Amino acid sequence: MKQSIRIAAALIAVLWCEASSGEPLRFTTDQSIYEVTPGDTTFVNIYLEEILDAGETSLLVDEGGLVSAQVTIERAAGAPLSPADLTDYMISSEFNPVVDPSDSLVPLSYENVFTLSHLDISLSRDFVFPDGTSVDSSDPFRPRVLLLTLEITAGTTAGDTVFNLFDYPDFGETFTYDELLEPDDLLEPLDPDIQPSSFTVRTTGAVAVPEPTLVVHSLALLISVAVPYGIRRRRLRGRHDSGRNTKYRA
Image (cartoon, rainbow, N blue to C red; front, side, top):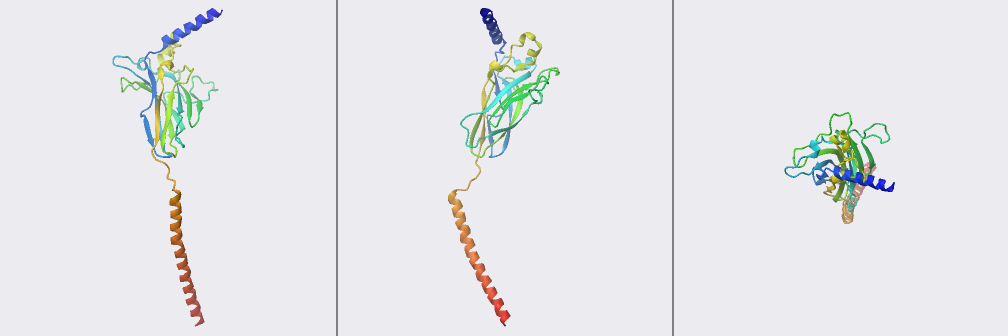
């Protein structure tokens, strides 16, 4: 019995390895660095991109795009005191809207975790569509599929906040459309070929906080102007009252 289990496990491992596309993929963005002023917001597109050399054929194009994908976005350690935060996200219209994972709708897109520093999200395309997602192949060596758009809000401290992009460990959720149609290929997720990457949100300045010495100097200047002004008003008022009393006495 144990030997049968080992043979079955070995066979699955072989099928899994053979299923791998062989072509490297990676999560990527439009820019490597996004510059934002304190408290402002920027939007970051997240793609699954195929890396091809001359003469190689695109798996994403040949197999009709994607029917599902999964990505994790995580803020790296070493961020500024007030780092940039993940404040919202919008999944690509190529996939189903995000719904409650407990819902009976299948397929579905859903978030596993969403905080200011971390997002796990699984995306699915409705099976009723006649094909997979569209593929942007404007760069023939870097065909890619838009997964989602992040809304990121800068903190108040100048510095770089790095966000890592990677495939969640132990998940097999990234499939091309043809894999859905071919039962023999259902053990062929693209996940093993997806390379991690990262992007940076750079807060270009800090919210101005007056220096303590500047506050003291400003207060001293205010007093130096206010006190003589107050004394002068008292003197003028005293003269006015004195003249008014003299008038009435006359």
